[in-house]
Image (tube, rainbow, N blue to C red; front, side, top):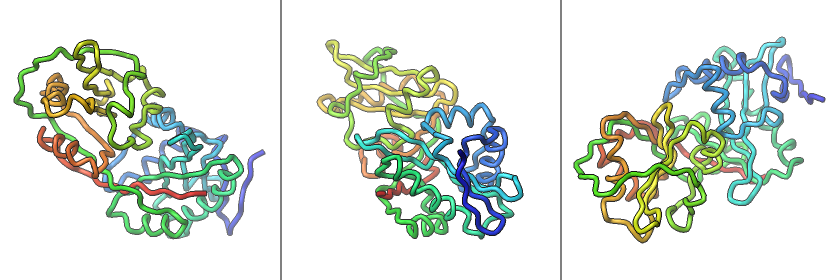
Length: 284
């Protein structure tokens, strides 16, 4: 049974039975004048839902006179070994902003998430979006880290001394060997697994050991992850790893600002910093 909450003529409800084309259109409308413009086809929108584990039963909508005017998309998975929700998007039709619809959707969702033993909620928001940041903080969210996004064509002056080999075993990529800081939800290994058919994974081996790797979306050349084994750093392996993308436009989103060497390397390739976001977290 669909649960609803009424306030004046605004109906807050789950998105279980939502029309995907209507939701996709509202998503694009909500973000058309955002800091980074977004315009997804229905197929691309479905890919986003799949990748981020968006569950429409947990997600929330707002309707006026039967028309969808707001949405709150929730992904659900185990993250850091805890059942976690992720807000993969929130938006309100421009002519209905200023009615605290987002706050109503959030307030509606929290008890439902608690009932399902969700412990944490994460989201990302542009650092310039003071209105949204204040609204989230009023609901109990706190900033956890700053995330950088880059795009551009890599400029590399390195002779590949190693062969770049494609592989498919994601178990070779371990946090102990490669990561200094856990990736965000969008770049998490589970997100990659959800769209593995769209990804290319390749790396560099030495004596049978994977010493560097990158994961790229074959359709839009977005890099989800790359890393160099802790024991093999400062040997130009990352530069060699990207040598096969020398003339291709690539994009990396949500690079943790605390990873100074990673950000320095990305900028040394000539990629442009085009967006900054805060990751925010609420404990339920």
